[in-house]
Length: 209
Image (tube, rainbow, N blue to C red; front, side, top):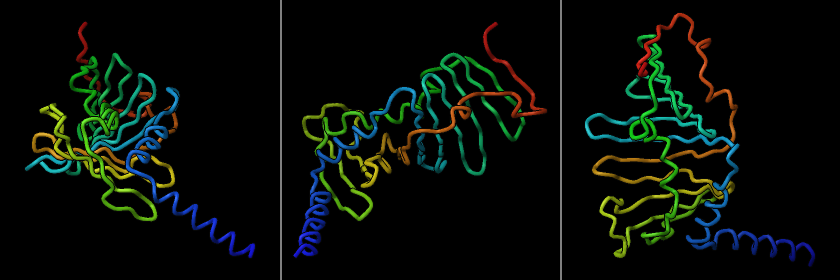
């Protein structure tokens, strides 16, 4: 009887895990993403642009500092920012370009995580499917959502073990945008720019004198 009781308890535990509503899943995701400011965040920001193809950027953020690793049709580039200064390394030219931070341009990928804020606001969320590893949610724009720039729908996948998002996919003005593989914690030196890493590189300083 004791063995049967254990099996029944395990079944109920499994059912309670899978029977969560979309709202409960997103609430748990929001909680999992609510990390202290001194914990670094890393994620992939991917854009699927017609004709041009996919542009992928891995983003590291820690306080005011960040690093972005850009990958596009075989070309790679690295950019560091500290809130005031931007350092961009072009591997092909072996050159470092130093400039002032332009928020409207340089923060585009960094702002990727804002897409997760208030997902249930202005959207009707439903569970499309689930596996033993993840929930797959469909977020459809509600009639009450009057934001013309808001995507008509978004696809969200949430990891069952960590409750962190596996991806959030949408289309904006014909361009596919996705935020993927959100994780927390990394070596802080990643977001620290150092010329010592690029021996022989030329430097082009575009900052205002």
